[in-house]
Length: 143
Image 1 (cartoon, helix red, strand yellow):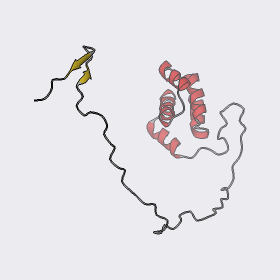
Image 2 (cartoon, rainbow, N blue to C red):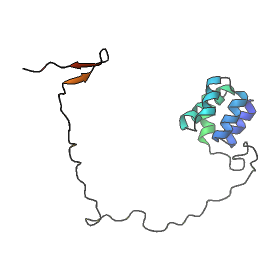
Image 3 (cartoon, one colour):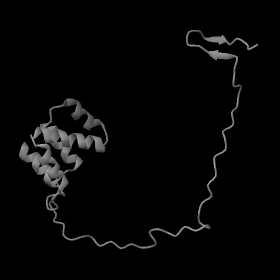
Image 4 (cartoon, rainbow, N blue to C red):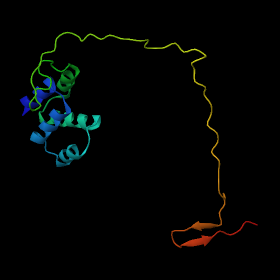
């Protein structure tokens, strides 16, 4: 179990990988149910990572060191079913086109205006109000 979880933390760290490991080794039925019915979120993923750390009896310092290191590029995604190992070499070449920050001039600045006050409609002091104890009650008129 510990070796599988360590391998995941070093080489994968995908949400689906964490879910698969927690279904295999996890003990909390409530967390298993939550990951089955909820969408992937950072909170759930971080909870899964912490639960896996505890299950594998990994010290917090060791866990922080593992998580600070990048995922091993030769094994990334290898824990998911049907995935193949692909070696990643070098940095992808990116070409930027256009002006990333266009110059703002007086001609291009949008005009900022305040929203008008919403109009209040209806009687601000209605005579008939709803009361949970009675169907309708009348307010006494002010003198």
